[in-house]
Length: 69
Image (cartoon, one colour):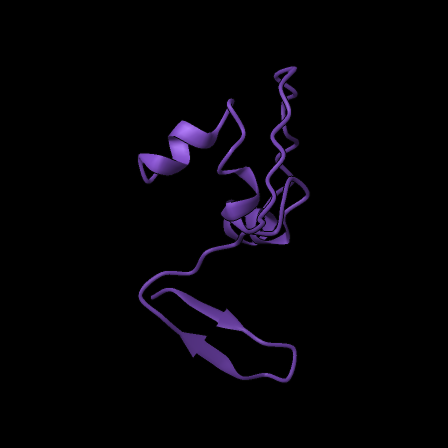
């Protein structure tokens, strides 16, 4: 059953456990039981959040906002 054991000893049970802790994921190690070094593809992904209103008049992304993307 999917669960997480907290540092205080409490076990939290859920339908799904998501380990979104990045490329050096402790969750990956816990699930696999061994180090699994990432293989660099030459690409990088950057994500950020902001209010979309500041981009509404930008010709590069304005149409995407109008389409609800």
